[in-house]
Amino acid sequence: MRTLGLDYGTKTIGVAASDGLGLTAQTVTTIRRTNLKADLAALKELVREYEADRFVVGLPLNMDGSEGPRAEATRKFVEALTEVLGLPVELWDERLSTVAAQRTLLEADVSRAKRREVIDQMAAQFILQGWLDAKRPPSSGDDYHPDDYDPEP
Image (cartoon, rainbow, N blue to C red):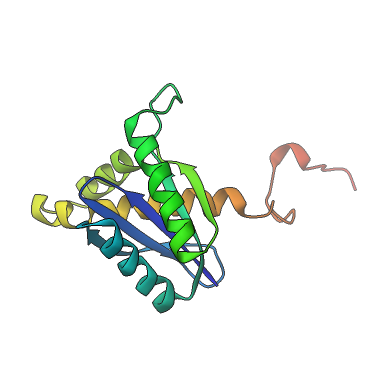
């Protein structure tokens, strides 16, 4: 099963999806928000299409970690999402995800018009990838660490 990552905004919802193994996040689409019922219907269709079993939604915290009006709106949206679609939803700190997405697009020399088109789904990808990385089990010890090297047999 897959996880859908969401960047919930006032005008759009950026959507990303994990691969089947839960290792990487890929951009999917940007939903232009109209009303809650239509937004949830679009997400329900994406759940079906991607066979998703959970959501990760970016929680827009202030830089000091406090919650403002956008975080409150996001929490209300998550309540509706959970109630209507019945899937587990995890909130993930999204601070600077849009900034990181913007920087990536600028470094790739993507045009302003194209950036506007994909910024929300790129932010969703950053949110989901951060969550996937944090949930990944620790390495199996294959990583080389210089302090672990003992030259004596």
